[in-house]
Length: 498
Image (tube, rainbow, N blue to C red; front, side, top):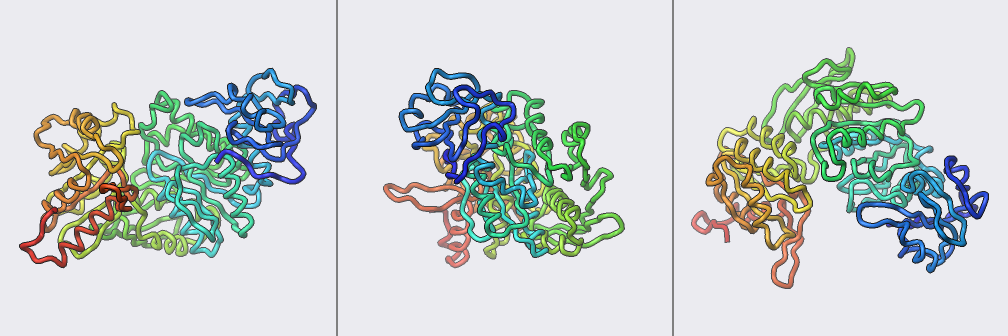
């Protein structure tokens, strides 16, 4: 979505972009803007965006041909229409889109959630706490978009500027008092949230990730820290002090900071009381108050996500019992160590883990609640950097008793990806290689015994299985669920992996 909605009255570019230089006009009145020359319509202001795929500055002829009335660019262009030259056209695009939508973020309390892992879950937990407090809330996450009334699936984590502004405007129109926005490092690098100011910024953790995009760990951390620069004057930051890299950015934050942790001293802490494969209970401590929280989602990582969400709610004035109710109301998050319970005598979990850290955390969590063997089915995503795949193989070999390497639902030739994962094994012969993902899942399910746990990782709840000319909307969860229900009703002699 690259085109903004038209706004009656227009937006002054000079006021919106005070650092800009103007050529051919003293100001440009923007009624609508577009970041894709091919989608320009008559009267649009074309914003030339420079990215890895193409440079919009080379497409100005196309934009003019389609009726662009003016151009925002990072350097002067040989055109007859007015040109606004800015230091960063992506930043300008975000600011213009927010202005065209009448800055909906200024009418709501906006929470931004960033980090390597746990962003989606933490965002949903914050939303649930606000709902428990009867606060109308909209949320934009990797999983879905919600304006508090309608919810649709999402195609990316952080929406492009026009889509972001449009959803925030819908939330404001629906009377939302709060908006929760999951903010990826890519979204920050591309300035998708430019022009949006936050009341709270939550950093879940910082790991080694997306180096193909950012080039280095330092650049990645600096990109994440951009969120703190967009806080409103009264805004605050939530930091997980159990995470060493997150502690590293504390010195760069001038806003008030609320710390959370399970191991390190913090403002808000948690102590796990008991944990099983199907649920866990922990004590949530805030100052002199303490409340038990029982959740069907398990693992220390989930407790950390709960702490971050709880801190956000508490600072926003929500009492601790209501915070606990909100945390407990989230009994699962699709594809986030999601448990399948179909009456089987072993645990089956689906997780979207597509990096070594998330995979290690998921397997470690299951090891703590598993009396028997831990099985893992894993197929790498082709978009992930090739040099990360051996790390995943190393994790599987060390953390799982039975490792099954496979492809993904979208790749008809997965052998190279599997070979890359095998490079991380010290003893490759220990791996079971089944290239077809569906067959790998069915084989692993057939191998599981009472007391075991099976982790199906790498895709989560998204996927299509192509069967001749038909497409079945079955993902990892659906495949496993179908097998478990079928075997639960089949005669023992007929149970197989057809």
